[in-house]
Length: 523
Image (cartoon, rainbow, N blue to C red; front, side):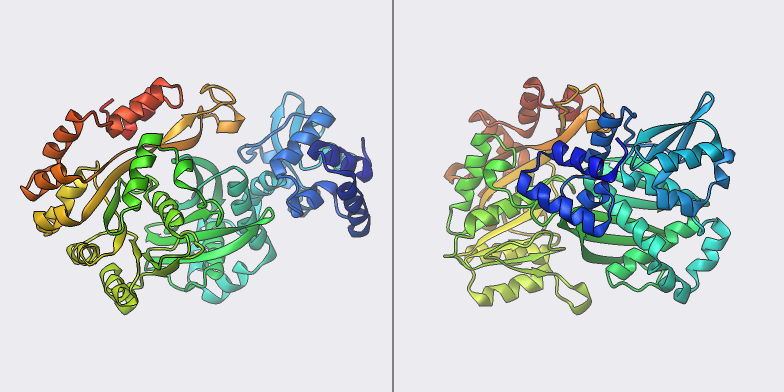
């Protein structure tokens, strides 16, 4: 199978497209003169990985979804322009032949040219983004010394950030991460190279290396996208942008901090539709979801979700807001940052540069006569006191705290200077949660391509929570701490976070090690 029309038909069959859509694609391909795989990728009909898998199956070539840059000196003489145009990359020597990754393993002309330069070659199918990443290692911009000079030249940085190779490089890094299901990308500079890592299910995996100058160019490109100061290298900068990737928009949340070897970059990837979950889709047990719903059904009071950074607290609050946003309530939020846009909710972001912090915004909100207020996080005594006052005056206030467990929310508020009787009067419910990795269904935890060899694919939430009733309110008013509250809840048959985590492991959803990590070893 060598002709472009035949390859187009292959992808049409692989995707199972209806005849009407297939006819349109045939006409479009004929007019544009575009390779079928590039057409399908551009239109968002198939991911690059799925295209490579279809080509591999049809051609009999092996499928490569991840690889390290080739280190054989014999490959250095290959023209970078040729490799880029042909969308191919040498991988490694295998005996007398060279394994070569191609976006189109049917490309006989490219294989002939590679055989002329390298000797016998064996074709492998690979995603186009992976091939581009592998070839970046020999780009014209590399070398630590050149990188140091480049960082001080703002004009060169602006030009470089808009250059086609860097635009493609950054787009490829982001597209690859999105296709693989990564939550964020990290570019961490070293003395000669920068390490690129992606986070899957809460765990970082190295996915490549960049030359020093290349890393500077990547950071500069991200700064341009986020409208940050391209010449500033001494102070941290935060920003945001939205990019189209594979047919959908992806929001970027960017943090850049200076280090001893250059600027370290972290890019969080957010699908605007990814936060659209209801309470019943979070993964809580039905009992805990019902308890949370009951807290939200109260007309006023303070509802707190606790846990460490990255435990899914904000996702839970967004699900709560969606439940409340029925059109008959005035809902205001103050966040840092706004992660997802919610219909029927007026959302604001803090701006410390002008004195707009959580407490100041919360005071202003009260003049709008809202029914529901969401405060992204209670970080200090001023915010805590304002939130309690809002709850006392008839508002439903949702927020998060950094505590280890749900009863700890009471202790934390009191430690912030809130009198126990005020906590008892305003706290409606407290919840704690963690995210645990779920065992990969494709390999049952042994490790495969679907789970990047880790044995886990996806995450679910484990948690605990309680509503404050008259008996608990009396304990809080009397100064009862977390241990006292936990003892009373346990006496009632309450299911703790540790018990929830252990139950998920016993059900085969996660491992005992993951359950123990989530519960602090107490399973």
